[in-house]
Length: 241
Image 1 (spheres, rainbow, N blue to C red):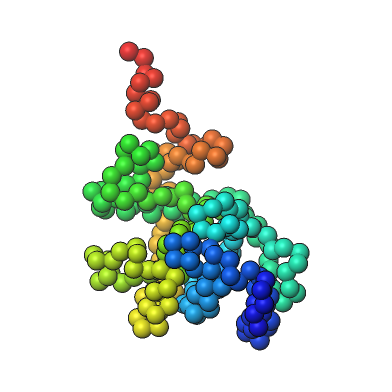
Image 2: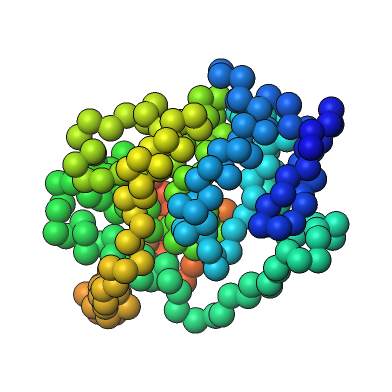
């Protein structure tokens, strides 16, 4: 049932009040808030497979894609009783970051012309493996999530065969549902491919060989064992002549 200011949706046997369905969120194509809702309903099985049992944060763009935003990390008190909630806490000690850094450095060793862990942009080449994204306050867009850009582009898994010719514009709010229906989800079997990676052992080896902690993002306080936070070119200029 649709009224001027809201639509009532029946989702999994429950009624959900959906406000401002006609509000334009993506100006380049005129996609509305309801178009966005219908997109997620059409790809729900594929999308939820990547989100199930994982903590999430909502990045809200109240004025539409490309506008001002804020992060909503807590469930509001007005949420319905049937919405499941949980509180996350983070243990102290070694961190899922040591493992990310060890993995990044090992990839760099194996394909040094393709990958780099250099934190400073002036030293980078190829693909930068950002180990700092594996932290408790870091986020990554989930598969099939719509990005907050005017074109309504979608994060979409692809096959290796598609990589040479794929274009970002191929995956939009209006094209991905048909792709999921006809092609399916290329990453559907991701959880079935389980391997053991001795990343903490690699981290211990790196430490024994004298590799210091890599730079942290600037909003973190200086960490024990972390090298100086200064651009290499600037560090050279500051050296006495």
